[in-house]
Length: 180
Image 1 (cartoon, rainbow, N blue to C red):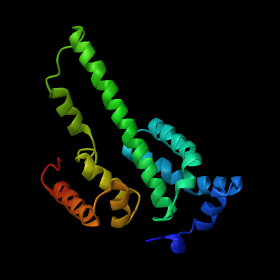
Image 2 (image 1 turned 90 degrees about the vertical axis):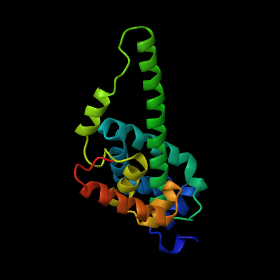
Image 3 (image 1 turned 60 degrees about the vertical axis):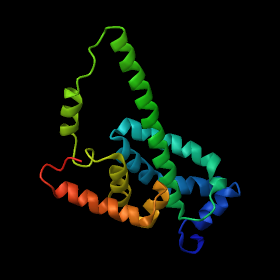
């Protein structure tokens, strides 16, 4: 199902794919704030959002030619941003975990007992306490105002799954304590 007819970015994307630098610059100008905001919501820090937004803009130079119009350009770009954030978090967890194991093995730190992690979870906002799948869904639907169909496409799940996740988020946040 092509979205070309109702995508306000169609002509700019076509021109950018044909090598028009001004069209590409216009696309970046039009979507940069959204890229940055989504990255900030997903990573939780301005510095990470700055880095992700810059990376996405650089990646877009290479990937714009692969845009097939199966979704709106903005939705496709949110998907690229989401994947960049997920990759950053995955790399960071891997590096942090290795560093933590090395300090325990070297005797420089005691083995974790879980209390610090528990305290950190309770200090985060209600959204940050959600399971990653729920948190990512809320960020895309509520934070980025994507439709359930658009969020489903980015997350690689069925539209009904997005609806269920949003229902679950409302249930969890209205429950006493709201921890997820």
